[in-house]
Length: 200
Image (cartoon, rainbow, N blue to C red; front, top):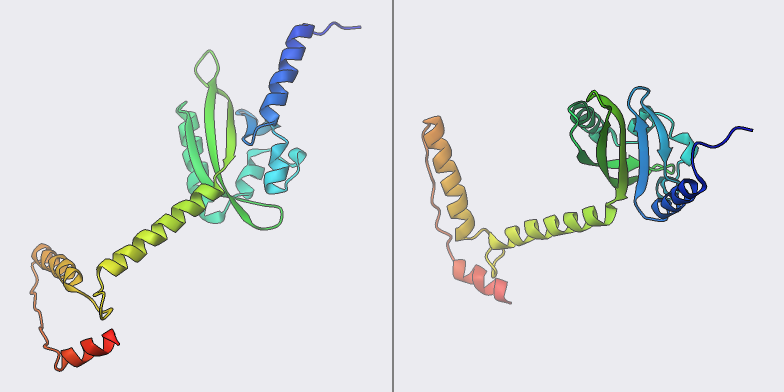
């Protein structure tokens, strides 16, 4: 009977570490660089994306389960950073087994061999869907506030601030392109009646 190269204490410590890692919301993973295969991925992945732990075999599975819009730049970025031995992170939309998408932040650490070449990649996946949703809501609010800042509160039509903004933009464009610039000013008849109607 062969003797385990690990002591009982080491095995116990490894079990404790594994239990702690797998009890977090972050999803741990490890990829062998030479074979581009997963040597480990946390069981939390199935709860988040619906794909079984055993279905994550190669980096191809990782790339295929990514939004097409994100895939090319994320894969190229991660490969380039890894080749240079640079720890990095990337945000992308991961495909669930039900066809939906979840925003993921992948945090990657590059493990090197003694000769400096890449041995493996290890890291964590984090679900950042709620953060992305809040960021989008904030962006929508900023756009809405900007729209309001360019409107007259009373009439809802473009105000002087928008006029000055557009005038400056077109003026600078004309200077840059060395082109002619003209402006037509119109006076609105009976504006008081329009204004009074807006107050009703």
